[in-house]
Image (cartoon, rainbow, N blue to C red; front, side, top):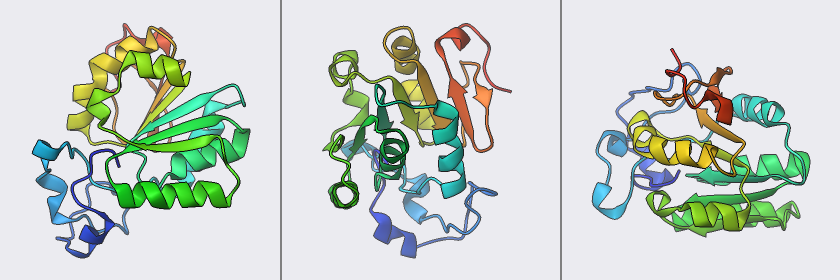
Length: 198
């Protein structure tokens, strides 16, 4: 994920806490989960989106080849790859972990998904200009609540501009009202003035 505290190898050093239950009950969360390396921009651990949740998200979005999906905290790229494979859409994945980014690039290339790109960048630095340059229509985030809270004002601005849809996995944006799926939340421009997901 974008801004991860350590690599996937950290998963071997676990304390058995699983805050993502029931969706990731088999995942043992690394100890750094609760002690991020904020100074270097790391704001979330790498935990892949469960396949069943990802399938439901892709179906919900009804993507076309005219869409561009931006995954903030793309990890191994599975969201971008699944979206592009299902619809032929463009996709951009952002992360800090170079090893995961390289794995994502290899996986996309192996499937012939030349319209998918993975970039090393700090999600807190992504601007509206970049959103417009990439022609982003959908933003996907699997980040922890504290990080979502930091990003919420920016996501609100993006929904007032070129973005037709924001999806968060497992946790919701407290200031926006979204449609609730099984394991995810969807936000569209018409939900900006609502009081949040209960």
